Image (cartoon, rainbow over all chains, first blue to last red; front, side, top):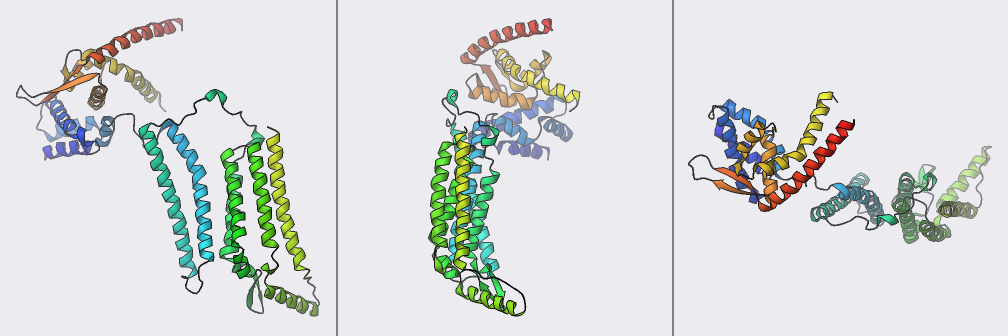
Length: 326
Length: 112
């Protein structure tokens, strides 16, 4: 039994080592353990063997020492710093893109042939999570290989590093991430679940938007979302207000405004049934002594469009002003 | 953290660099691992087997030591290590640096 213990200990060490080392280390440890036990007086005693093995320590710890001090982790040093940065940049992008693709996929699913909503939602979430995990694994493998091969990733010329930004010019990831989440949520609402937006009239649920028309506008809606996400990702990557960011934000803002005009400029976007139901409801209310104004719906749409364009412009101006102060 | 723990950690850090110097110096005459542990211990440099054996292997892979299994004397086979020519050259450089460091450290301690 004592020999079993020794052999099992040696095996527990060598199994973690490269094959070419195993035989030599096995012989070396066998010799060492015998020497240590012999010095303690009773080489055949099980207690002596246990004392010796206790002194040598945990097999995994010993294997770690044998395997060399240079590679105790998969990704270390400078590679770890860059790995974390790339993860923070790439994973939100992957999450955003896969979410949009899933939403578009859902939007074009034939409702009659689709699984129940809960099943579809679980499948969608699982698909998104799976893709993010795959991206995480791929980035990890790439950096592990870069670290293993010791590929030089450092800046060659650290005498020409960029200026330190002032506190007001820094962009924290919270803002862009929030904007991306809001943008994806809106795209999901418009393309995948437009039926949620509506009202109940005489026991019947009537949607605000004509879902067929709205889904027919998937190209400008998708382009709008992608432009917003792309602009926010550039903000995150830059980390500070720069002229380059201001130019990108301006181009992105203009293109997003164009998308907004295409979407809200479509007269058929509002469900006529909803307008009729709202009108009837207003008339009923008036008869009962109440008041509700159903104004010109085109003016309401115009107002929404102008508000969106105002905020796009505001974002562009703020970015440009902050960048110009650097 | 307790004072004793801190001190133990500092001593370990201080010894870490000196062990290689000791090993290269001692193995100018070939010896097997356990014998080296005993010799170092007798000279007041205690080192544990689980530290020395992996170190010997690392120094061998770096070309500073060479090894041979001795299986001729009928006893348990023993792996003998000896400092290579490159190891001796490195040792000479390290000794010079060590003496300079000791001198500089003494100057700092005396000035304190």
